[in-house]
Image 1 (cartoon, rainbow, N blue to C red):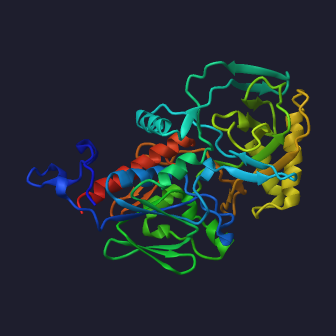
Image 2: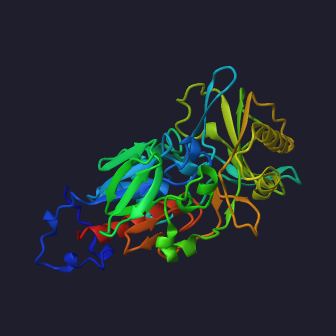
Image 3: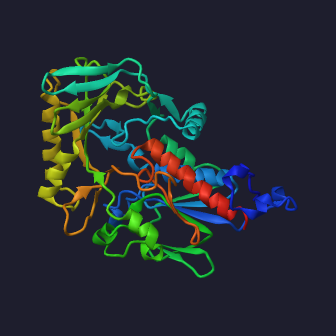
Length: 424
């Protein structure tokens, strides 16, 4: 496998690039392999359906493959997505309902990200979501700041937000292994990494590792599985220090399906002002590419709770997986707040709440959810990087807590490893 030559400016430490006597076009990279390990929802790892590969890991894997590096992507869930996952539900009368219950859309301003987005557009993976958006004041009961034309385009995945990750994980040069959980990542003396599955299976040796979420090194992994976290950050104390206690915002999502359009709502997405319960609402079925789905006449909405509301529920119910009774109670409370905006919203025929995974904290502090990070721990570097061990950790918590930040972090991790491995 031949390495694709990338921009010289990206490789200031690669001596072979600066030596004119070396013909870099004939360099072979057959033995160079990188493992990209999914991270994210560890709440159900014990049931082997957690740890979704997020967009940061998928972008990193795709970029490495395009630069001639063999990539194996490990994912214990059935598919990728992270907070760009799409949820499939079945109503009581047998209707299949699909919801983007995490990130409803994304915007981009960085030139590198926009270049990728335009590539995805050309492949039919994303499309601009051209609808009116605004905010709703729960005191005055009025819509405010309705956007006819937003300053930044809002992009949605086609036919779901997870379509981008799915496509990236299936590109040439990326071997995706779904349903394979990682039990241990071990750094060997020969500068290689050895990966072992949750079932004890030897998954191979790799020249570098990318972890696409901090959860793989989280103490909560032990709380859920009874096993130590797969990645022992004592190997990299500097990275461990940066990963400690990243502030995040918990969130509950409520998925709703109505048999008729909510014609009284003039926008398709809006934030809430002066609500202690709801922060955001959008009409999921109004996104491009959804009209071809089964039961297209059904109107689907997704609501997001405020962080304070979610913290209150978690404080009462604990960190364990929420019971059906808890989720039913949350669903009713979120929907009642939605109805209270005074726009004659009817009862949906389907209603279900979801809690994004909750991260364990130190004993001195309260529990909180980890679905949406609120800090950036590597804004300049855009990823955490241990050059000596060839370990990169990427995610939206590195750059900015949004999809664009996750993409930038994945690109940065790929650049670090490409720079390092192109001389091997």
